[in-house]
Image 1 (cartoon, rainbow, N blue to C red):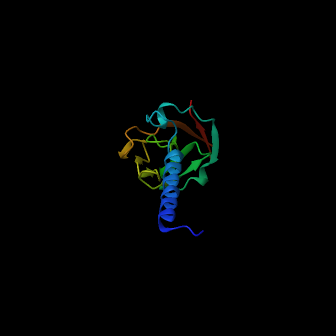
Image 2 (spheres, rainbow, N blue to C red):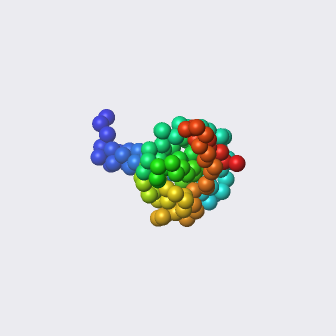
Image 3 (cartoon, helix red, strand yellow):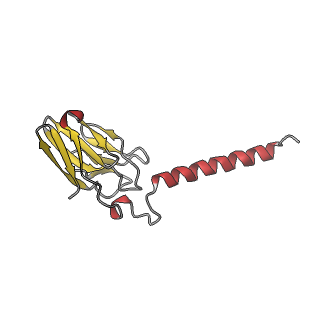
Amino acid sequence: MEPNRRTMITSAGAVGTAAVVGLTSACSSDDSGSGAGSSASAPPDATVPASDVPVGSGIVVDEAYVVTQPKEGEFHAFSSVCTHQGCQVRTVTETEIVCPCHSSRYSATSGEVLSGPATEALPTYQVTDSDGTLNLSAK
């Protein structure tokens, strides 16, 4: 028996609902709604060649840190986990770090929220340059 129109529409709606629920789960780090910053543990130390961090931009390192270099030789390190719902930030420009899930924007120099929905700054981490190698530490 061929499916009728009602069966096809109902099936399509169920698939769409499952996709939305899956996306929501992927962006949420916990069920408390308090954001990732409050329950995340500190990431392990990491290193990256300073030459890998472009001037006027930045990179995500080990899915834990976002390192920026707004000006030549000026490095900043932050958590790469959005404080809104725990998504990984991906885009770094000269002035901001952008979360792809809900478009929260953070300062590339301070980690402060430039626009929400996030309300908490990205945690700031230590970054030191040792002969062209950046050492990143959450301590």
